[in-house]
Image (cartoon, rainbow, N blue to C red; front, top):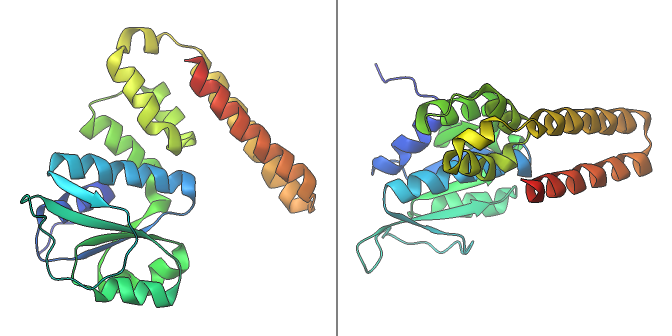
Length: 211
């Protein structure tokens, strides 16, 4: 019986094996998708694999570069026409798409469901990076797009990072903004929703510069 793997183990296994040529990722949204792209970059580096982001859908038979390195194409598409063409080529690839397309194609290839990002972030920090700081894990779960920058800062300077109190303030503030965004969308107030989104982006940028 084949071993049941979580999303991160699936990505790791995909890089190591030669048979399966495609992996599809339901990225949910760009922020969560950026976390899974981080995982792809991590395992690509670990396996000496070059990532190609040129989005060209040429049919080819070789996934080995002239220098002997493995190559992997990265695509982002929700178009059925484009996806059919991408899946039809013989190159090894990872496809980032939405949930609708993910459901349609998941039986044809390996799949990563981004809705599991909360547990995936915890696994990545604890099992892959050996980080067990609950504050940092919670922060990355609330802001997946900042996982790389925050874990990098922690690994460089663990002592000082563990003493930071701003991490809770940031998490609580972003949660508050997101609740306001949800409320404004529910009430149909588009202008208020837009202003809240701008506030979240601005706060994240400021927070990144402040550390």
